[in-house]
Length: 303
Image (cartoon, rainbow, N blue to C red; front, side):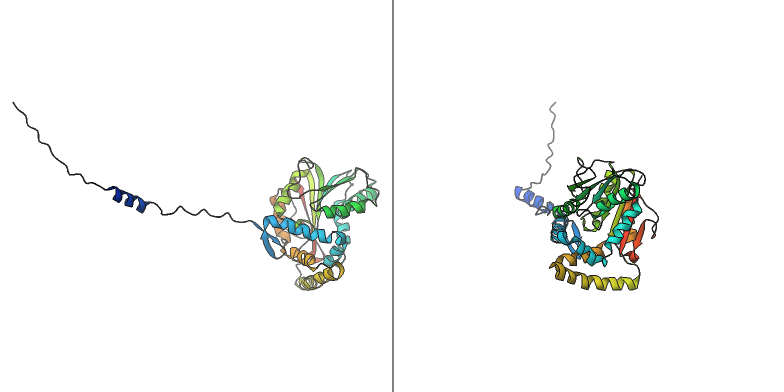
């Protein structure tokens, strides 16, 4: 018996290669997306905003200019009382009271604080074993400090050494972790590109129980005093820079850098964020104002 099978033909649509190409072009973007440019990190240089990598060079130029007239600069910005503030700052730390200390003075190129530390320990506690490592990013400032120390009894002794180094990244081979009992920085931290990096390095090099101490121009809270100080700062200080040092630009920057520095509570929080313990957020707690806040001492302890 012969079996018959039916062949059912199914219509098949044919798509031309041209239509496939068109379809593909419709579903793909015509151009690859443009990659986003990385955001450039910036820092303040006085009232100017500059690329972060430029600030270090700009600050170096300022201090190259003022190194030989450093005391004059501080006289102009502090009515001449910076010496009294530095004396009070070091006295409050009482170096030598509990025995010899291993200290680091950062941004201390001219040696003002280092000399006071060594003198205070010797004169008050007969301590000739306390040591100070003076560090500064600016070689001209260090030369000025070295020249001054040549006139003292500490020259060519183990009690003082000078190091050109960046406060934001102290070389670990020279400044190992947990090394120092006392870290001081006076009128220097506001010139650093990254204050948090400086504070983190301070925490790293201090021993547990070690003290961070900072003397810096700060925020005047009395409205009348603030107005008078602003008028003096923005008119007289650049003028004095022009007359006495022939350098208005550097002194203008120094005035502006003071105004850009964080107010007392904000800086105290930055110190705590780095790991330090401080007092409460009041004058006499985490900080101590001098002359109504024209200058201020901040302290923290590494636990």
